[in-house]
Length: 214
Image (cartoon, rainbow, N blue to C red; front, side):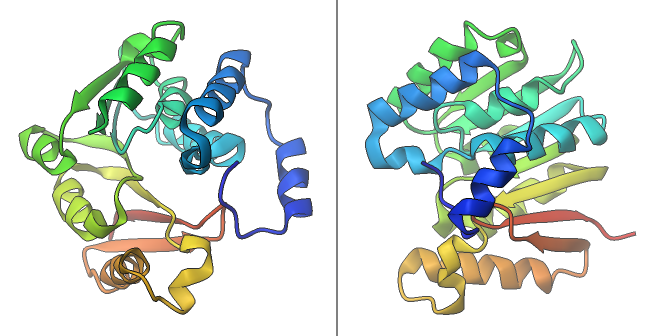
């Protein structure tokens, strides 16, 4: 139940040719669908989750920051790629989602690497010291530009910032609602930022990768 702009047949083909999830994360997906209903569409899913895990591994990340945890699927995927002394800090405002995520973190061999910060993410960001090697933004869309501006100074010089849902089910082409316009504004903001280089990928619901300009 993930949002995608890719035809269903191609999405199934991509899934069939992506490393399978461990049983615990399959269970987490099922539990998220049962407990959150349609909101389970916010899960990044197997393909994007594996993509994030590969980014963490390829960047040799030791510190990861996640803005928007939901039920902890992406946090577990990225934490699996961290070294034994690695750390992932994840921000979430919903106590029920935090409780559910912690249930599964406690059963995961990587859960000890994950630290949950409850409360508004902008408040958490203001309290953090960098650098982080990988930053993943996947929270309320109206604050994407604010999250980006607060998180970018925390990004290591060789790090990668990733923003999810940047194609917003295609609504970036004809924005109507508030969140549509927020995503369009974010994409334009990054594109105009002379501090960075960026690429927008049509993976799942659109993923923006950002690095410091060389």
